[in-house]
Image (cartoon, rainbow, N blue to C red; front, side, top):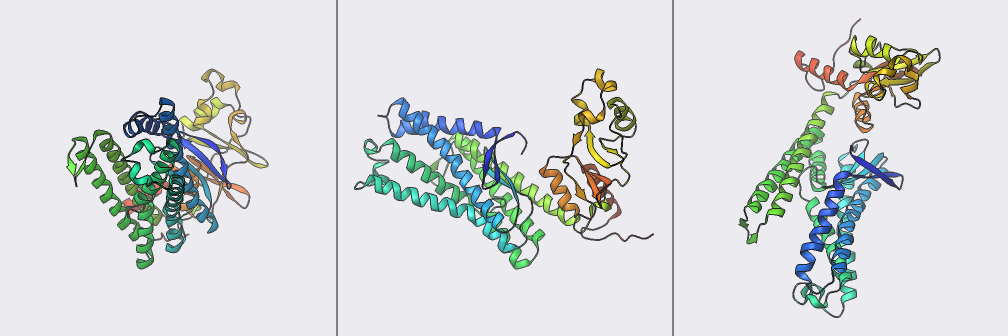
Length: 401
């Protein structure tokens, strides 16, 4: 995910944090330390408020991380490769390089997250109960708050967050975990992943719009079901609803794209005659003779031994224009080891590689040699041509000659 930075690895999975996580962390810490805790526990010190608030805010995202790790561990146990986990303002996302191969696989992967959150909530509730014996922590928490210590409060809220995380995620709206479980069930019944995705996605849209409408009612302080709304909750609900709708729309589009590209090989779409340049060519030559005159956005760099690297517009933009004539492409190219795909690879897999690696184009190899260059624009052009010709998704194009 763009705008994120790496923290490290857990079980071989790269862990990252998106910049929006920082805003969410500050917001949660401020809400607990500056509002919620002082209201419920007026006798604490400022240090206690902020200490508890920061710990609760931090543990919210630790809980989300554990939730996502459980998804990822189940995925890896089923032979799926998990590239990374990124935490952001709305929670977390596991970047799994391939889709589940069966409805049962998706059911297991999707259910692992909420199950872990329910388990954590149960363990913390038990710890709070043991620490608070012989009193009633749930009664005293709201009625006799003077008897509740900061440690109990932190445990109570972390347990509550995990319970809320589990309940929210079992809502049967795609792409939430409950929506994925729902899609797995529909997939298992219909044996049609595309149909299951559309149904689950539309349910996800419904819940997204319901959250937006409920959030709007909160903005105006309208009481629904005896619960008085407030402005901040309204803003949060609207953002979550918008996120659900956007994610559901994206999932439906992606599934439609996969269906259209089913059975298509990289060699069917790639540029079969990429123009190679020698490593000693100047940046100025490449800019004027390839990028400007021929509309290229990337060029392979080759010598008698084969592919050496690739130079792109992004590489050129890092060089001042007054140095173009004196700088060779070898100095600025992206060199081996390069991300490549094979000409016989499935186009869906190649497109997934472009997305995962945030690339606009990728060299195509055949029998160890460069045979083409695949770009996102090639895929778009291919899809547009199929649409103009009225070729239906899944329909193959017969080749002759």
